[in-house]
Image (tube, chains in turn purple, orange):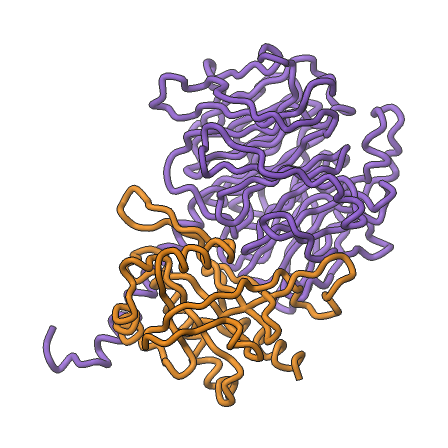
Length: 410
Length: 190
């Protein structure tokens, strides 16, 4: 380097290099896995293990975490490798989420309100149950934990009910190792909760609505379908304060921010409205909502492609998964439909956008299928196609049958 | 580079939380480590200050350079706002690789990144001592296949009472937000 370059020149060069590293690092994160908290460390290689959060189909045997081999180079590819016994039954194990460093998974139980802390980093093929939080309602004043959402160095949980199992619902923060930090309350005129999603660069968080444990624990014929929310709340994330209240279709479930950096809109599947809605922020900081498109019956899950082009909707009651092109938000287009089996529900799209794992249990009080499975679809230029060979039969496993719900990759 | 140590004390239900938007997350674990100038630095001796703490290692080719660079921007922003003037705010960077990161190595690293030692200290120590600190702060460092160390990228904000009040993710660490949070903790402690 020429001597005249000097200290100033070296500093400028270093700053430029660092900016490049940061930009590259940020872009790598943006092209990777979707539908995880943005604070979770991304998987920078093809997946090896698929974790499936399972409950015993008859609520008699213990619920468990299934580990499926999804390493395409493995001789055991497509097989169930391990079952982590969670030590209790009847939990309605539902959603789970990584800690920010991806070393642990927190699992939520809709019926028992237990929270399970699972170590997946020490031995990803055989995760270990580290801790079970049994006294969550007493500690938080909330029941029915649903979403386990990573924040930096801690977790944010959405809860579907208050202490007595009815509304108002709420949110609670815990340290990564399970110490309660604080509760966030909801207003009395928007007391429902379901999912949560943060857009850190905008300092915004959204929460959605379902129904409380007192209602969803009942058999479907006895549920009060007027006791479901339709609000989406927009929060100032750093202040944890509600800024806006939007009306969506009935039962807006998953919250999916657009993946484009600083894009101020997102999507949610309205399960009792058979539709996908979107929220949109404007330059004055105000938000509006509108219906984006109609779906098949009971859109139970919503996923995104890494390039922000496609939305995937599982239609629980019409047995189909739809792929929608939303690159033009004024003219969303249905581009592919696939039928993986009866009542498809949870989906998990890989970081390269080419594979989608699928399970088919929604809630034990709502399921109507007798056969439960984990299947795989391939996503390509000609849409979504089922893999005819990948089929983990959850009815046939030892101690089975089991209902599989949420999935994570390692 | 600015390293702030941010401690937020954890509040149990109805405990120390108060009405601050920055929750008390946990008590910051104490330590006694060695600075780039070979002086002993104890966390307890920094009580009364707002601290920003990062964990890095000098041979990192991943997130650590970006962390240090971002902290440097924060140090500059704090200086511009006059918040470093009365020494109530200090930055700390603790090594994740004590075997390699000796005081001299840390000193050279600070010079490379233009970290102002007036309000920023880099820390190392014996591997036993440093590894204990890493663990007690909920951090970890594991050998990766490429010869580097894999580790979380968190920056901690600690209040003058030694409590962790915020934890930042590197990707979303904005100097303006850190300055805002530091300002809030300083006002709360008056």
